[in-house]
Image (tube, rainbow, N blue to C red; front, side, top):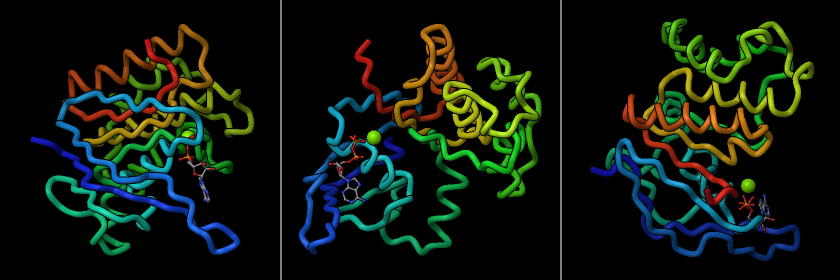
Length: 204
Ligand code: ADP
Ligand code: MG
């Protein structure tokens, strides 16, 4: 059964001069539990736009996004908030780390927001897999681009969300770390039955 399906999703951006710029022109796709799906497309083709809609960050679209059979387009702000916190782990292309919180705090922040008990063991497994255990007290501005990306990955995975949305999650990593991150994401799918939707430029 599909956890997530899109029916005829359309999205245009309104430009400064009042005109509409169409980006998504009727997307139909569905994702199963425990499925890994890659979205490949050239820069500017609307991949991040699609992710923002699926992730409940942009509710100005036409068509339906059904999650467990419920249309998120009809959610109130509060329902959307709960959806984002409980269902979705979002790995942002530009990381979106909070600058005043250290690495550990950034990673467990979504858990704290939701008053979920932090599963320290699980979070540490993620942290060790992506090799940032010696940076937990650093603030984001004291990290390299690749390290920030790894923190963003750990944060998205920490709550073990049923749907992981990853917007070019390995774009800033060296090839060894990239392999480890991909292996970790695959484990999420195979071992924990999470659904992974990943934007990538890398066809391999
Ligand atoms: P991708 O992630 O595939 O590179 P995006 O989804 O970020 O592409 O953008 C798709 C298109 O929409 C691009 O042409 C981009 O310039 C345009 N776009 C993105 N955000 C906005 C916005 N807020 N207002 C107007 N145009 C936008
Ligand atoms: Mg993008």
